Image (cartoon, rainbow over the protein chains, first blue to last red):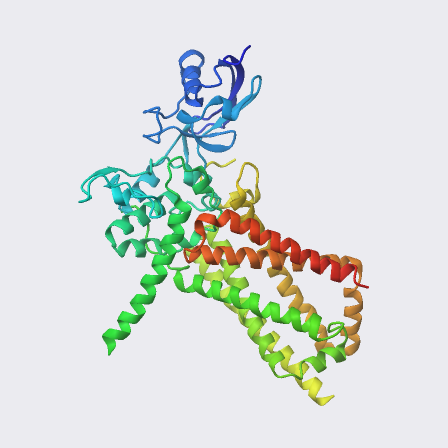
Length: 248
Length: 124
Length: 128
């Protein structure tokens, strides 16, 4: 064994619909600079063709390969083995929390995607609006006509990491609230504030900021939830004053 | 539309009330500790000390306001934890009634106790 | 272990393994909240001794000076300080203030909390 050749045991979560879950162990020869997803794919290719997992782009753009690696949410395509294991050690790979398991590492994210639609999530924004407001704006053209994909990959890792999402399936969750904040920031559509000013909306957040910690893509859902609260408060106060103005 | 019907059990108003009550508790508790441990020498460690302390009219008023805000903050916080557990609307209705009752009883009982101590002190 | 959200998962709120500092703040806030609420109602019941005359109250105060109760009282004061200071962080963040520095604010406030708790412990146990 040398620095480019490690032996690592992969403990992979296994569960098929309706069956109890268990972990299967695979002893793998790996290069520590490979990514976790590369090894999971190799397990599927050479050890067990019944293993299911989601993946597509292999370069942190599609958000499909979110998993829990040693209990922490990781985009497995950009997580080097070196970061999560040592030579002769173990790596535990589990599906994302707070989503129903469909098969092994694949979870049902249907509800999350539908809620993103409700929050008017747009995959594309002008360069100015695609950034977090406190970031340095990238603006290639003065007229703002350039657009780019927004940062959120829809990977669901923020919801997996959220402690409140452990107990209530009704909570919109950090990813959806972040999408609503982003859409509100772009459109000033106050119906979005009404959507999230709800017991299952922004008020369920208890400031653990795990969403921001695991987000692989600079969305900062924790900041966005707090910004929504501020905007809801501002909106409610202005509503009171405009009602008074009308009644005069 | 995926999101289920609007559930207004926790909104801006209740959240703001919880925060304002929390802030007032911090302020009043600060005054409470200052008065009890620094102004009243040796603290309020005997019955007669307590009766004398309550003869200053600011004290009973402060204690009653403090009680109202503490009970409000505690029950709103507890209710928020209950909401994290995704209760059904029927269960939540009973919890709401229960919390309002507990809160009202605690405030009425505490206020009665304050007036009892004030009356006892002025009669003594 | 249930993978999907379920109210029976509530004990996992309090599991700090593989979590960041924000979860520690959340756990501390929740435990101190529950403890302080329990204390509040116990305190109200105990203060009822004031209505039962000087003997009842003074004998209660004597009991309150026993070491076990003093330790309990210290825990309540510590919980109050931690909950109050962390509450300031949550309130500020909710108004959009200091959200990006919540971690540093939490550390700073907890250092202040440790200092305040130390002062209380000193005055309660070592000032005689």
